[in-house]
Length: 369
Image (cartoon, rainbow, N blue to C red; front, top):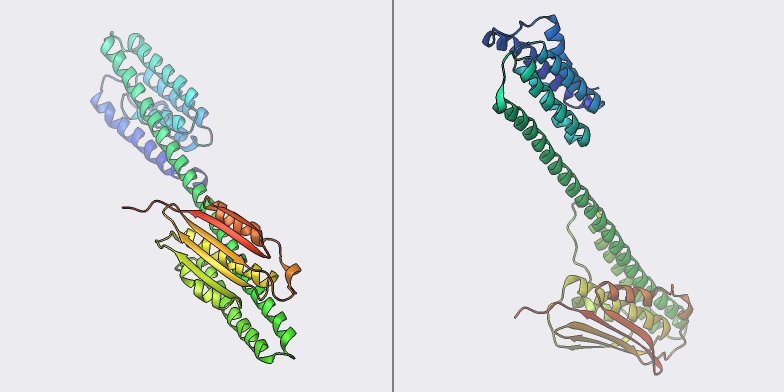
């Protein structure tokens, strides 16, 4: 029951003690009122019971507490603490969402007490009494409405924050999945190409086969390192390892096993997401060249412009049979396009003469003067 009602049992006990005990004290200051007897005590306890049950039966508990208060007042018992539970019940009814019922009961309460002032008090109470009763009840209801609005806005903000956290977590998982795909696709493809080359040349050209095996060793070590770097990001509390960037292009080119020429035009700092996308586009392009055009000469051009980064990877065609041309997943070029599009850029890929050309443009924010 404690979990069902929260602090309500404790609140109900406090209200019950306050209303009964202090009503005895109120009688000494109002000797002209009726003395507290068993009926008065019973009526004083109805309100606290309503406080206890207000979350399970909000409208019924409030109505019962108000009626008990009306009867208590009309029987001539002392004013004062008896009005504590009606205040709590009306306030709770608004904050629990039953606003129409709460305002109707508040209006009935105003009418009852104004009528009481003219019928049972023994003397005319006047306009001031009527306005005071009305103002107090309306003030209570306005405060309850404001409290409800604040709570609803706070709950809405919390829901929005939770939704944003879930969205960011989902995006992070997608990013990690894409990173893992790119790391595995490139390095496993490189290992596959070099293994096929080594098998093809092991008898006729052992030295070149040895070079291919050395490349396999380097690539396998690299894929383990990159996988460890990406997976560390998923560990709670782990620092983010540096992601692949254009400063590592020389390493990428060296282990690609291709004759690659790197050209850079201009220079400027790049956002991390652009660095990562550019690196992965070059990486996938070199993977495709190694798979489909082994032995070709490849040119990688990077153009650093004020409004964007231009990337162009071209090869002059295969000089040996592409033994692994049909073993790709088919996701390389679409994956590169998705990376470029995610940053608002574009990417085209297609035959160019005897070879193949990939061209991408990634927009960049304006540099501060």
